[in-house]
Amino acid sequence: MATWSSRGLRGSGFEEQINRTNEKYREKGLALIQKVPTPITPIRIDKENRHITLAYFEQKSTVDYIGAVQGIPVCFDAKECSLDTFS
Image (tube, rainbow, N blue to C red; front, side, top):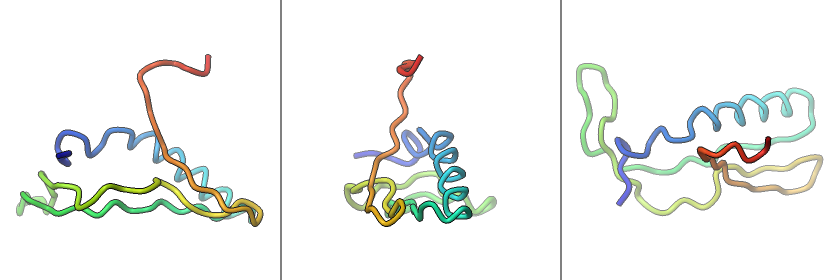
């Protein structure tokens, strides 16, 4: 089973780029795309810093993003890999 400490932040930089891009699209009225949250069950919490240090995913997620681009429904996953595939 996946844990927050081992996989929680993987791809978060890429998702942050997508979130900023989606915000620009929303501001310009081009699209409304929202991140679909993945529910987790916290197991261990650092009470001093109020951070979740260990958690398990409650269920498998569907897609990462869902929305509409100029009235057309879209949904997609954000995937990051170590290879430079677009050079």
